[in-house]
Length: 374
Image (cartoon, one colour):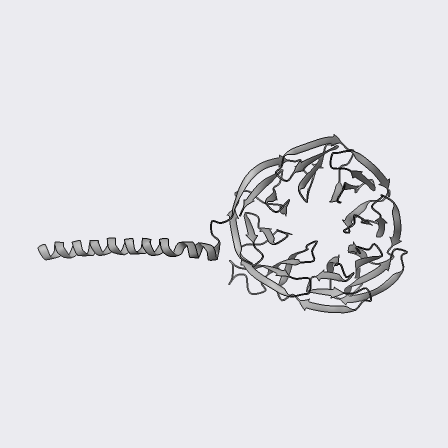
């Protein structure tokens, strides 16, 4: 009986010693593990909330810019800073709009009326210009020149003084995307053509006078996005490939996308961020079926990072990538490390960087501004 008690006592002491040893080892190596995984180094803190109308018969417009958020609803425009603080409001007769940002002004395209309105950052109207055609998209080059695509398959180029300097009609196909070179001399368009038994995309370079300089046909491909770099060469993002093409219509390089393209974004520095879905059987691999991949402007893959769930939104700001599923926010650093995974208890609609440290998370009827603590 005494031997049995002594054995139990020895076993108990061994358990205590083992636990103490585990704690000591954990305390010694956890900082290293924490550094490798970056667990706990990054956090999100809600700083502000901006409500907006989102009903079937009435919807507000929310656009996230660099360092600002613009809200348009009930014929009123409001500007918020990067922390979600209300800076000013003013009456503006606009309902459906595309909002863009130049260095010295905010540019608002009234999509229904075909009007471009210019405001400074204090809310003063600087001027306007009438196109009188429904606007499909508005893009800016580095100098603030505007490329406007209408629903009638026309494009307009407006200089930074608010003057129309080019108007080109595209007779065949549907304009999917376009960009204006930084020296304002060329326009590049991706045009989708659908025929009876096939479809193809044309990437066409135009002069401002409307003359086709060069082009290239992509059979059985939809070219989704185009971006002029500083060398007047164009990065293109298609449904099955990424490529670079020059103004002579010559392909400089092309990279096949092995997985299924879900989302893609080209940053204003020319970096490409992709959300891909693995082609392997999703029933077998239900967890890490989504991949975030970053590619340099010369076509080199910098990293790929697997995440859980279906990505619905992605954005890049300088070095860091933000991505979101319906209920999870991911942050990825420039090395491809997953530095934050945050669960959310409501459905996310979109996610955008406002600045290096502030993130806009857009829900059905409000925008939450969150501070990223690195």
